[in-house]
Image 1 (cartoon, rainbow, N blue to C red):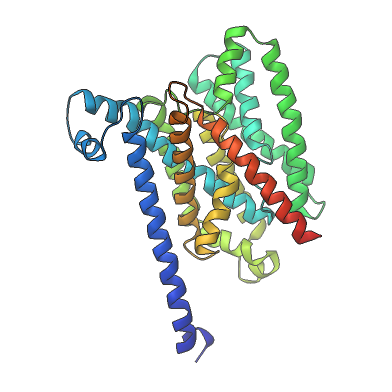
Image 2 (image 1 turned 60 degrees about the vertical axis):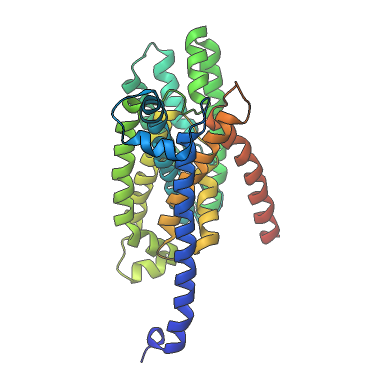
Length: 342
């Protein structure tokens, strides 16, 4: 009889699994509640029951508000939040660093740089800007990887190098904005704030489909993520090709982050905080990816609701809300990490 088949072990694990499932169920309810709130709250408040009725109507003013205006934005918040959260958990797992998220190590800034290059050189096509943002994210990831390759202490080195690269790219972005025409600079600055404003079906469908496909690929690759969590030596001994697995997972994570940035601009905080908050609920068990995705969806959806309704008559970009929350959370993480190390 092995350890896992002993009655005592089974009794110990079953309550833990049950608690995790209950917590996951509550998180799912929170996702549905935030989704319904996104459809209900706005300049015109609509009751949840009326919202549900409008979803099944074929015409009418309420249907236009709910289905044509609010629904694509609400879905984008959920899917993009989940994508950012999963991107963050991949980077934090690979770097073994709680600060290892794409917004901290400069990937979102790099995506913004790619978009700015197209905007400030006369490119006005949304497709061109999106492609440039995705390429900028991948180029930044390649640059950070090249600067930290073969130097040891990957976790903290990649964060430090990433912060440095982000600072340099931030300066480049500011320089490009200063030299751009006024209307281009204003448009780029608004996009760079990270906003779901103006997201309709035309802007939401393609990115949602892409991130959904990437999320499916990531879920199918969860064994590789588990092997990386065990450590390179143990993962290799269990038959994993760790270097190749890391490269594939990083590519997926960069793509998730870059596609979201291309769609709505740079968004901070979600990729950094969602994996930690999900881990408080389900630890690092098999449900962690699901919990992380749900947590990211809730965070971005709630941030958008706050931004739209905190100041009547003056909507804030969701990126501004997440940036404020992210700054506070980043300070908390840095202080906690420093206390553990020293």
